[in-house]
Length: 72
Image (cartoon, rainbow, N blue to C red):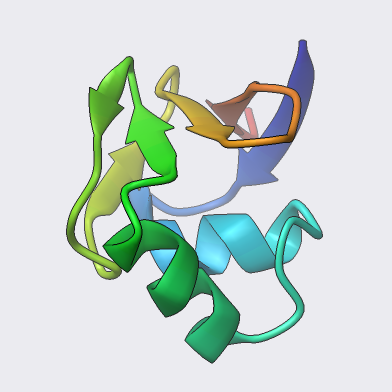
């Protein structure tokens, strides 16, 4: 499983999608999320600014899932 490393306590879902290169812009993330095509820990996400924490797994339709990890 691919990983996204963060240096903070959490990261917003739209930022995660940009860092993982699933989308190119925040507006693209908003569309993907509003269409119900993004899950966090297996639950469909509906908020673009949802907080994603270390060990959360993010899945976007058509992409491999990845885990958010904290830089130690």
